[in-house]
Image (cartoon, rainbow, N blue to C red; front, side, top):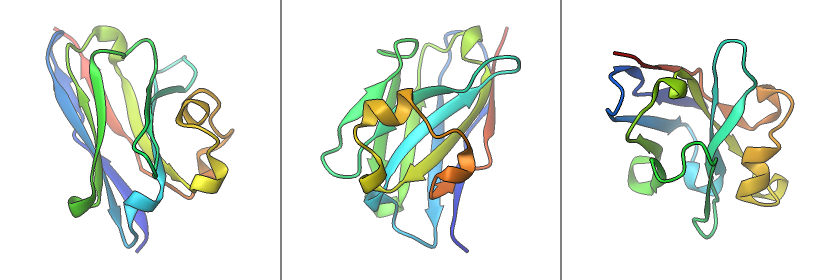
Length: 134
């Protein structure tokens, strides 16, 4: 079955860390550009971080720059989002998406101007809840 499985969310105190995983099943993830998005109740979807399929270029939203790191492990067919110094405002459902390189003009564009619907991506994860609270 071709799918993306995102995991690693949970409850963490402010200042804590989590590592989210986006694992591909049935296809090779390194061919695709990958984006991590998040959506909190009552807020618009936000592109958190994106990574290209070719040169490994990355993009981070200003709200997470310096705290989050996106990376690939091609041997494990997985993309990670390391989240440090977490804040209550990071609370949201996080999910990863995979898009064909031909549809991605830049990683910044992928994150800043996402597709209208998640169904427009080649693959998408089911989402994992991140809650930052004391």
